[in-house]
Image (cartoon, rainbow, N blue to C red; front, side, top):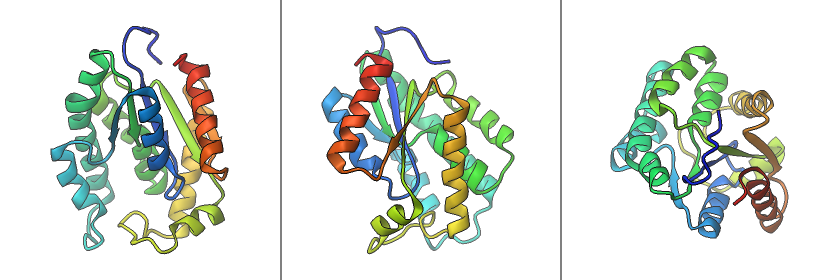
Length: 207
């Protein structure tokens, strides 16, 4: 459940498919809230080593289960080293991706058993599930246009069907937990998306 103790920091994550703009808006939101800005994977020194393996295009034989375990390991370190200490000190945390990306990418995208992926990550995060999830959603043609000219990593190089399953997964996760999620039209202008994000944060968390 979402924590109700308003004296502690709040944990906010931006989620979405590749090219949705979450990294840009995570940075903008963190600046506006004077929050700790972080990311998954790679939000710690140990996590950065894990991220290198996960995103390396020369890694072609990583099993889907191993991939899920690596993301959970990154997350456990990230929670212990970055997220939990910041929240306990009263700082807000804004993260570019979180546990929900694993549910979308490894659960829906890789088609691993969703219940098992969730159970593994419940152990990784402990009680630290995000208070608010902001899903930046946009049509595939918008995302594809934004990705043109970029050097694509291992996940970004996956096929259209994989990315559609991931997008569908995010949408289903949002429907499953409407009290925790807000879906924002990521096809809007940067400033319009930013205004929508700030309105959602104020409405849901009072900050």
